[in-house]
Length: 171
Image (cartoon, rainbow, N blue to C red; front, side, top):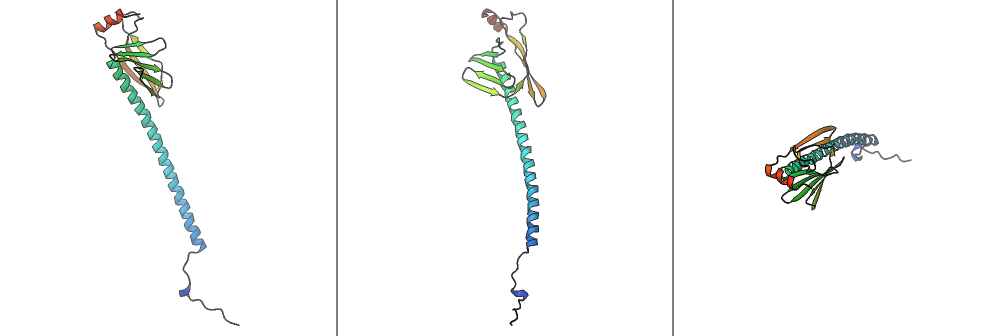
């Protein structure tokens, strides 16, 4: 009977044992779980911040538009259904206030939709004029954003000529 050949340490292949590979895979899995959790947390944080910024941007654009339109308007009126009508040198700009949005129609050519929640409008007619003329002197728009109310006060000063012309053109 022959003796099995003696294998020296020099001729052995170097390799990882099954236990070493298992430990390396376990460490990799734990690190991957931490990295995924951190990425998920930062993704959610980024999404939340972008939504807040987008909501603020809509409010800022709405405030800018209604103040600019009212400043440039010659007359501010309101119809029977609560639509604010601004008359300027180029035509009519209307604001229709709904509970969850505001529609702005400019000269029947372009409509903007502002996705903001609104409370009922507060307005004051010009004193010493028949209410049928309906010239608005003060308008207070309440926006509901992030469980708080934002007030947008708009005031309009009319010249004596504007008031006389509005009185002459009453229906």
